[in-house]
Length: 230
Image 1: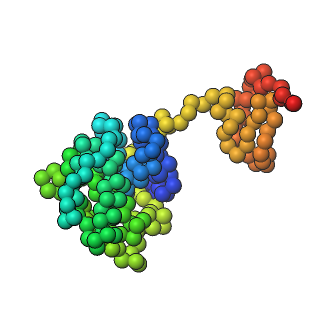
Image 2: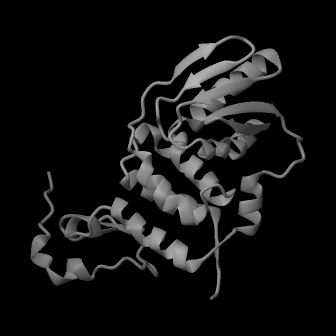
Image 3: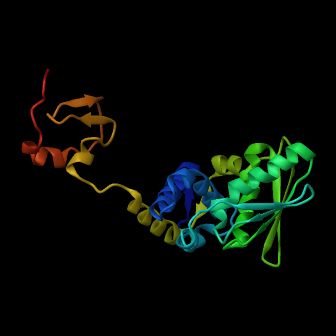
């Protein structure tokens, strides 16, 4: 079977829809998306495990982290949350200590799925840092250090080469992502594509070689109404 080569853009698009449809709070949507993309690409869960991880995602709603410890080791209690909810916040804590003290060690407890915190190795790259995690007895110790300036990042690799995926795994994710889309309707068709169809039928925008499907609008022109001019 022919394998698929996925671009970073389409991976992000589909994964964002999936975590949104699962009920991720809007304020956490992009950070959870980035964690899920990293998990799929590194891979940790991989594309084959994304569905199961997303199903676990909202089992415990996001809540504030509890932070304790001292200058040597910061302890973070995740309260049973999924690692994708807390990855960016835990990484931010480690980075702050690294910038202030030159080293950082953060111990994370009570994660629903400790191995998924490994996504921080990809998330730290945008800060010019390298993050590593080690699991001991269900707890995760996160450390950060300076990253070589000339080291290629995960995103660099994906942008350049794409990611190979099994069609039998990818297409079910693609179709499931449609659950995040608004239902197709007369009103939604008026605002689809590169043009806008006003309530009175006027088309606003480019009219050359446009691929917008106007068949639903043309089939029932009575639903369009005259323009109101003041």
